[in-house]
Picture 1 (spheres, rainbow, N blue to C red):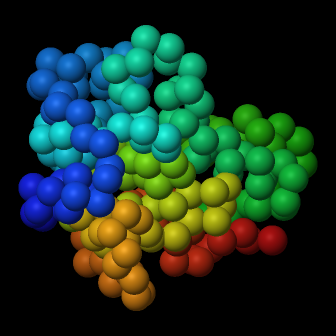
Picture 2: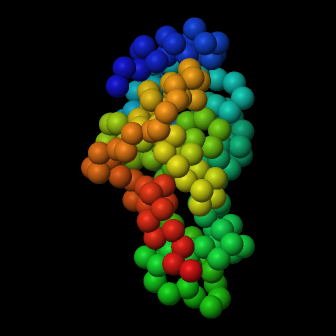
Length: 187
């Protein structure tokens, strides 16, 4: 992954780049919000921090918007459970009541998705380098880039064409299944 070249191209395209976060700042963000950045996301923030509308401001003292963005993927799935009949067969039988609690319980076991830009996310934690970037809007999940540099080129630099199918070892539990349309509802 050549982040330096991608960041140079973003800068040339007019994306504002602040100085990198220090290791201590990254660790503090992770502690405050209870997740860890995957290696690709950590590498990006350790080189430069894109800023402006849509970009998360990890050092902002007001945690409310960041907490809302971190909750967005799970809250969106729960919305579809409550209002659109979504219930994957892999979750077992749909309970007759207590849907929200049951859905949140199952979603507590899936990787935390961490915002990169707008509603584009990388998984937190031990995701392998080269993990795809996902666009998440409720249960409408697509791969928006085969990895972080591919995503940045697509979102900001005009790259087009189909997103290559990732290596199976880069699957992100639950989120990859939604992107692939596997077990989408069990309805």
